[in-house]
Length: 528
Image 1 (cartoon, rainbow, N blue to C red):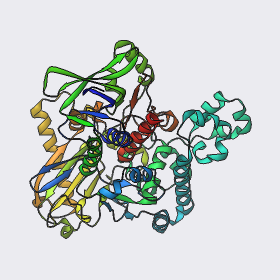
Image 2: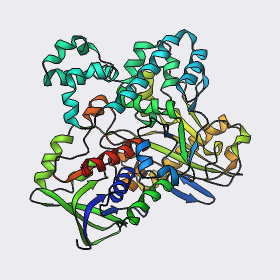
Image 3: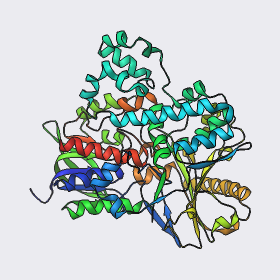
Image 4: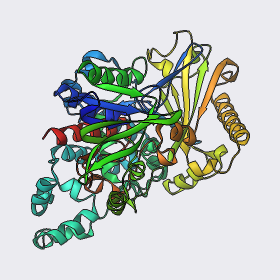
């Protein structure tokens, strides 16, 4: 093997790529990772401003209980032995003009709190938790191999009743694949609770209770009526079962640890190098052509038996020869991207608990949002009225700043089209105006907080696109709508031979957990 020849070449160093690279390195594969940024991690990174380590993307990581999907991964890579995870005090606080409620983690505890506040909806609340928790359990029992899933089709509603009930497209697919399916399960064709919005409407009447249950939807998507019930249930039930956690010192700690596994096992990480072409020979991916991010005069090549695209799948198109582009395009041409996020990172020069901040994450909903049908229009409407979350990292020993100071983040849904056709000056002015809008909102919630601000930064969808190269600045990849989730998510193995995907854009999806699982699934497919 020559010095530029590897077993595995990985384009990008987000969590999906890092998990895949770490696992493959641990199993004896020689890995070369190519990253266009000066640090690894993608959205799992931090940056410094004055006395503050500013966390880019992690609010809280779900699960980490004995039934968590990630447990096997964390044990195998010894993540929990090397990274300190801090338990978040509660799931979240929800507040609008009528309701102010703290939702705890733990299904029993959350059920009691919600029934106490909405006693008439006791039956619907119990049904909600029963369904999302059982979907979560059934997903874990699913075989990863598609051929095994197909063999299970006639018996799917027997072994996976909640998953079956959550996908009308599954029923259609199964009936076309196996004509006996509808004879065995004739009622399945009428079951169509594919999205969380429709499901909630079917079991609950109180609109404010629905908003409480959907408080953190921006962690996944922007519209409950197009949000996959299956994906929502898997993630939300994991929060309820295992709680939320933060990585002490910030998510960069996890990214750096995974990178160290790759290097310690003889791999290389090439930073500030951008991949420009996937090298092909005999219709197989055989390596990657790359160049310096800021100096495009000199190109280099690495050769590998397997290439993993940790970058966005749409970006892979431009790296392939024309005939392979056409083949891949047929599989992704109709897929829709998710929304993006805008974050205002704030360093406070004192402990803001003294100003009345009592909770780790508080979701503030605007008075214009009366029902879940108003949520999408709120996200796409005037930024002044947009729902948002405020995360106060001082509620835990985060390690992001000194104990006498506080780091906090305001975060809300964003779209790249909101920033189209702006000059650099207009862009900066708009960012500043948005920062002041939300700082003023915080001042109304916590009197005196504005004067305690020492520094702040604004990250938009354009910022995410700049540092991750994700089209539209989407941190979640393809939107988690029913026809793009679960069995219908883009697979880890591409249609191009020896080319794999490991990112938010592929199976199972976005978020920290989604990216971690994607990398793990990808690595294990390669190893098998």
